[in-house]
Amino acid sequence: MSARIVIRPRAEEVEGQPILRPLPSAKCRSVGPFVFFDHILQARYLPGHGMNIRQHPHIGLSTLTYLYEGHLQHKDSLGSDQHVGPGDVSWMTSGAAIAHIERTPEPFLSAGSDIHGLQVWLASPTEHEQGPGHYSYHPADSLPVSDTLGVRICLIAGSGFCLTSPVPVLSPTLYADVQMQTATTLLIPAEHEERAVYVLEGDAKADGEPLEVRTLNVLSAGEDVMLCADSPCHVVILGGATLDGPRRMNWNFVASDQALIERARARWAAGQWPTVPGETGRIELP
Image (tube, rainbow, N blue to C red; front, side):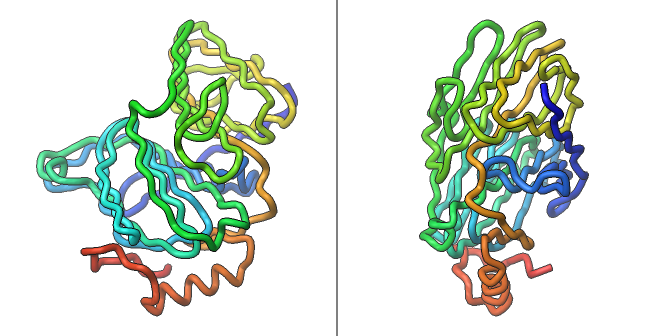
């Protein structure tokens, strides 16, 4: 196996919720369309407490939220209002301008709840950067699953491993949740230009080389890679086609042109932005 890039994520907090963030990184700005990757660390909210990400804007990207534990309410400026549970996919494409909130819904806020999951951003192709916004919800039982010989693959988005997800991605994408029993193997084919493996837990190897837990391992292009489990392990495999040009990122904005970001910042600061129905609180520009 050729040398791979190993990214050790930085620890941060989003509105009080601890996360690990391997993307973006100075070592690697993107993997396929993925320009941002947050591992929402497992946490327990006491009664009366929960996640509350106030109204904030996006351009030039799609957000995808996938939970292992817990529940979130997604609301956006398109009028969407969706309860998202474990194994569901919440998919929002921003286009030229969208705002949304994510919070712990009742009755989980009153009773107390757990949270654990992933949220990623996928940069939109340039032809879609300034297009219309879109939201879709995909319940857990709508996602394709392969479960054989001790390897369970859930295709969250895109295509791979002979599976295709219903999530309406805008470019070739691979995003798979993989659980492997001890001594099992999985071939990661070179069908996608760029690929990476994030290890949630367990002892895994790629072509015989150990992968550290909670690291993002960017694989060499054009090579099949054999993933092996030395213990029960849980990994996420992500990637896809190389972006159609570099992307700039500033706060919650992603764009191929800095002018689009400056325009978005000015509009949000001036209050000239679509709003989430029924919401008044918002996060101001940093």
